Length: 91
Image 1: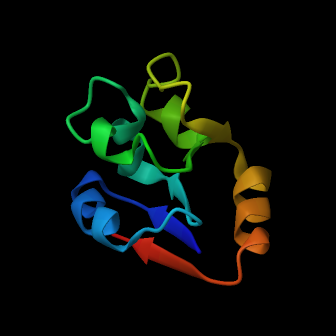
Image 2: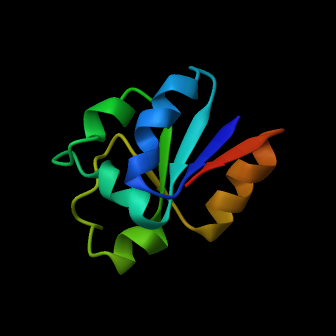
């Protein structure tokens, strides 16, 4: 399953639902959690995490994202969506 996370506040709920086989993409304000200095980073670090590059750039976080989070553009986001049979959006 692909978990699409839109806000940092949704991460606590996400952690209780995500499995090892799942992948997570951080978009909109959730991209702040990809910064290793962010309070929620340690929760997402062990997961398969992608980050929408355009949202990182819009928030000036391009240089602060952890290398453990893979940056993707919109085409990469579409590819992730196509790769999974189901997705769940976390607001």
